[in-house]
Amino acid sequence: MRALEAALDRGPAAQGWVDERWTLARIRELIIGMFGVEYTVAGVWLLLDRRGWSCQVPVRRAVERDEGAVVVWRKEVWGRARK
Image (cartoon, rainbow, N blue to C red; front, top):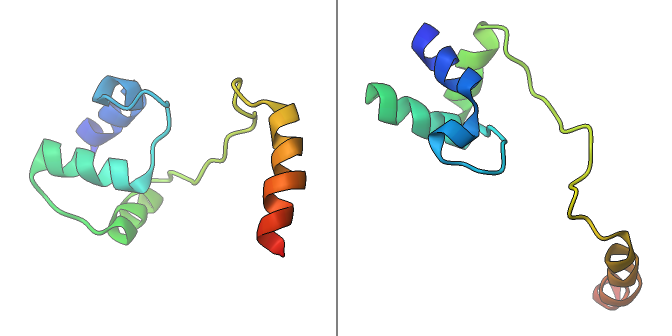
């Protein structure tokens, strides 16, 4: 567990994921690569939960977000899709 936690502390970018987000599927891949042991996604969550890890949600929005494009999309695209 210490080796896994050290790898998680180094961050997703150190493992090749550039969006700086750990997901259960990515942690599962990391475990398989490091230890050759396969877990289900639910099993990964149980493993992390036992160690005191919790689900985190980003606090901020993406820097690239274009609020104007979002408004246009909601009015035009979403409006058509709802109909």
